[in-house]
Amino acid sequence: QVQLVESGGGLVQAGGSLRLSCAASGSIFSIPVMGWYRQAPGSQRELVATITSSSSTNYADSAKGRFTISRDNAKNTVYLQMSILRPEDTAVYYCNGVVAGTRGPVVGYWGKGTLVTVSS
Image (tube, rainbow, N blue to C red; front, side, top):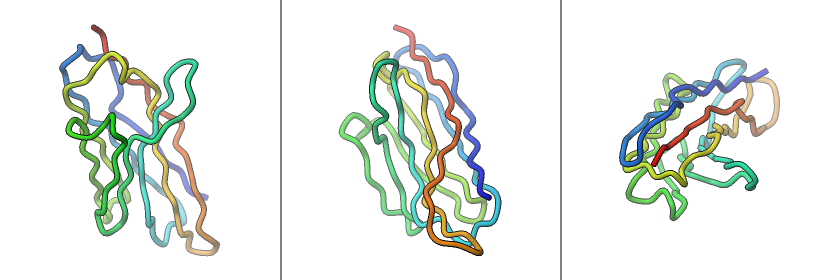
């Protein structure tokens, strides 16, 4: 079994910064892709950014220039540095990992989410 645990959410004023972290644990052989998604109230979950094990990144247009995704492969951890935050960034942020387990196929896992609230 694999678990993803997010941390770092909270309340911040518009223009401020936050850093989210997500640590994966369990029967992990490798994590080819890790990423962040978000879901605002009344909206569908959407991609924020992804990063491969070789550090190739992909960002949603809304995140480009403001957010930076990174990872520490040795710690099975992914980070999301968010800057110049806007009220419309308010959402629950979910970590996702595409995990190759030690005994099974590649499976996608989700964390439980961390709430980010940006006040105007």
